[in-house]
Image (tube, rainbow, N blue to C red; front, side):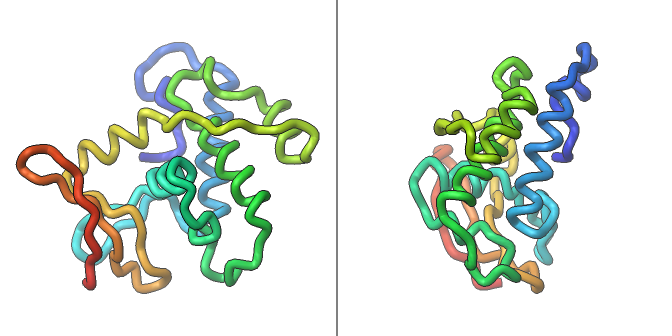
Length: 162
């Protein structure tokens, strides 16, 4: 999962909304302080947009998403706003993505942002991973939270001490 919009990969006409997608992925990288995909020691991969979507949807600790070098020193409302904007920007359908002028107004505080739907790319990544890691502990890249699928297809959360 990179920073290219789905339309780049599907071969359909590319518009300015492809750049909006890339901008959203870059915003997520700025929040996290790492690339959006991190490969762990045990060959699993993390996909940070999945964690962001999960925290936004269930109302989790938004400051847990921040780059650890910031020591959680940030405004919860501002981090929430940035994460919502990023999730709007990475919507699968380009017509669902905001114009960059709207993104700018939201980030400047002139316009409000509503809760975005979970982008399908996030859901597909999780479904196709089987064992998908959603979070890694800082520099060691040691995995600490994973989702595993049981044989009946149900997802289960578990902690990993590796």
